[in-house]
Image 1 (cartoon, rainbow, N blue to C red):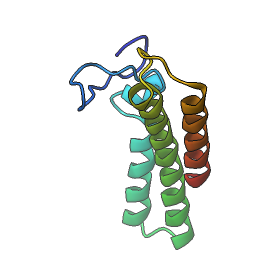
Image 2: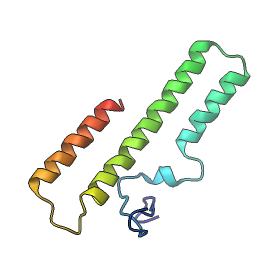
Image 3: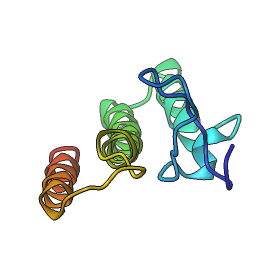
Length: 107
């Protein structure tokens, strides 16, 4: 963990990445997503109404999509746009546009 954030090694450089975009709770031993997955299992095992199962699946998917968006955004900003190198305004705008499109797609 770096500054309260989860540190992940980059496959490309084999060095710790600067994953400042991943919230600390994602690194906890039992992240909120795990509880949502367990809730799906409970509703299936309890013969719950289909609507309850679907609601739990939807909540889990939303949480996973939000986490995926954060990780991909960090990858774009810290690996594709290398902060150690000079980044042009055009590259920054292109990255911003990609992140915006990604977040809209994952909603």
